Structure formats: structure tokens, C-alpha cells
Amino acid sequence: MSADLPADLDGLRVVLGSGSLRDVPAEADRLGARRVLLVAGGSAAAHGDTVAALLGDRLAGRLTEVAQHVPVDLAERAVRLAEGVRADLVVTIGGGSATGLGKAVARETGLRIVAVPTTFSGSEATPIWGLTAGGRKTTGRDPRVRPTTVVYDPDLFRTLPATLAATSALNAFAHCVEGLYAPDATPRTDRWATAGVALLTGGLARAADRLPDLLVGGLHAGLVLGATTTGIHHKLAHVLGGTYRLPHADTHAVLLPHVVAANAPAAPQAMAAAARAMGRADHDVAGAIWDLGRDNGAPTSLHALGWPAAAVDDVVDAVLAAPPPNPHPVERPWLRALLLAAHRGDRPA
Ligand SMILES: NC(=O)c1ccc[n+]([C@@H]2O[C@H](COP(=O)([O-])OP(=O)(O)OC[C@H]3O[C@@H](n4cnc5c(N)ncnc54)[C@H](O)[C@@H]3O)[C@@H](O)[C@H]2O)c1
Image 1 (cartoon, rainbow, N blue to C red):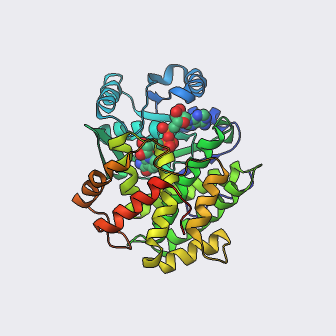
Image 2 (cartoon, helix red, strand yellow):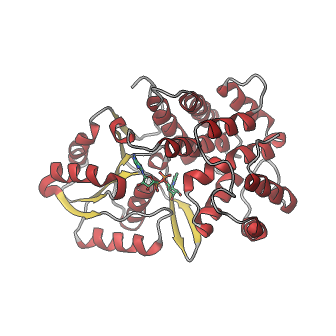
């Protein structure tokens, strides 16, 4: 691994290294755990088997079903299992969906989490939880859901399909960009955000040896997300994901260039910082992000994700019911234009 961890990890314990999946039992021991609830399904099932075998009789229960945006019934089942087996620690292996399910358990039970990420979602570094019920996603912050320990094993990321790696990295990119114009941005969050933008740009622009930059970029993005208030980009991603079940990382990848283009006139300092971090003398942050997505095979339009333009006013209504803080005022014509541009997916002018 060549990219350096940030010096300021905001109190997170981070273990990073090839093969570190096998350190999970030692990390559980470190926290005094005797009864581990393991969350690992789908693409992480085999890693779950590895950790289960290493935990031996410290494994109290196992969940193999995970789903994006944490459906509330799944969360309730997970909490019941944690209580039923008297778990004293949750270990999650997987992308933001697995981490999110672990957070749902932690929120109800107060159990600590050891997170082993396999995407660049950054959820492992945030105190943000999310739950979906009846097509509506609710999110909130609770320090209890922030993982105590994060174990990054680069070997787990090698199976990420190239397109998912790109869209997941653009999800992380969005955390950094929104952090730069957040109302509560600080010099500390700006440092994480600009370092994250630089790492993610470098990783996405290279064909080979990109994993270290994307992985550490994703961590920076999670630190930013955990410490700042998000704007219209995240609001739209959650409304579109929760209501229309669009894939989370793809939705971020499509929206980001259009959100940046729409916000740029209202956030000149943030855009200048992003342009510097991306090495863009022309300051075309929106176009450069769109190029990174297209060059990496990411979807570029909401149309391609199956979202119908006819739903534009429903989404606008849902956003205007509780508009987020955002550098550009969140008004109906502006928001409609942004959504329709993302639906068409042309390179932002
Ligand atoms: N709370 C937070 O701070 C936060 C931050 C970011 C995302 N999220 C949430 O996380 C969810 C999305 O997370 P995600 O984008 O990581 O997707 P995900 O966890 O749903 O994974 C997407 C797909 O990729 C597969 N996958 C994951 N890692 C893989 C790997 N290494 N190799 C092969 N396949 C792999 C998964 O099995 C799944 O099919 C959403 O619900 C989102 O709201 C939360």
C-alpha cells in the first residue's frame, strides 16, 4: 500500500494491510468480546466463513442477508438475533449495506462494531445510520453507530467489478465535494476533503495500481461525511435510492457532475479547492468528474438507471418537503433543471 493513512483519524482505530482480515479475531479480543455477531453475506460470504472459523466459539451468531438502504424488517430481525444470542460485538464484512445493517443493530443495542469494508462507501468512518420503510429512507446520526475499529484488507477489494469500483469511488468523491461546501466545514474537514479528492482523482485516472489511493481516499471521504452536514447531492441520492431503488453508488456517480455544475456558481471557494486537488487549471470540476465516470465505464444518466423523467416533480416535492442546507438555494426550477440534466446525462457545460 503506498497511500498514507490520514494522521488525524478522528479517534477511529484503523488496521490496514494485506491479509488483515485474519486480524479480526484479535481486534475482537482487544475489545474484550466473547460473543460476536457476524454480518457477512453475498460477495463477502467467503470472507465471513474465514472469520467465523477463526473466531471459533467466540462466534455467537451470523447474518448472511444484507440489502441496500437497510430495510426496517431486516434491521429488526438483526436486532432480535443480536439480543437472542447475547452478542457483545458486531463484526461487519462488506460494503455500505453490511456496515449499515451492523449500525442498525448498534443503534438499538449499543454494541460496538468492527467494520471490514469491501467498497469505498466510507460508511465505516461515520456515525450516520439509515433505514428504509415503505419506500422512504430515514437517516440520522448517533455516535453509538460509528464503528470502533476498521480493518481494511486490500485483498478484499480485488474482486470489486471495475464499474462498481468506479461508482463507489465517485460515491466517496461526492462525500468530499459536499464536505467542501458544507455549512459546518472546518479547516480539518477541508484537509480530509481535499486529500480525498486528490487520492480519488489519482486512483480513478489510473488504470493500474489504483487500489491504495481509492481505499485511503474512501477513508478520507468517510471522515468528511461523518463530520459535516450534507447538501442536495446526498438528499437526491437518498430520495432516488429509497423511493426508486436505484443502485446507491451508480446514483451518486450519475448525480455528482450535475450537482457540482448546479452548485458551482454559489460555491466558488469550494470549487477552487476541488479544482486544485484535482489538478485542474481550467477549474472545470463538473466536466472532469463526468469524464472520470465515463472513462471508467460508470453510468452517466439517470435514464440509464431506469429512472423516469416523468417522476421529476415527485422527487422535487420530496426534496422540498425537507430541503437540505446547500450553497445554491434549493428551489423548484433549479432542482428540476438539475434532475433533468442528470436524467439526460450529457457532459455538464
Ligand atoms: N451511513 C453512511 O455513512 C453511509 C455512507 C455511504 C453509503 N451508505 C449506504 O451504504 C449502502 C451502499 O453501499 P455500497 O455502495 O458499498 O454498496 P453495497 O454494500 O450494497 O454493495 C453493492 C454490491 O457490491 C457487492 N460488493 C461489495 N463489495 C464487493 C467486493 N469487494 N467484491 C465484489 N462485490 C462486492 C455487494 O455484494 C453488492 O452486490 C447504501 O445503503 C448507502 O446508503 C451509508
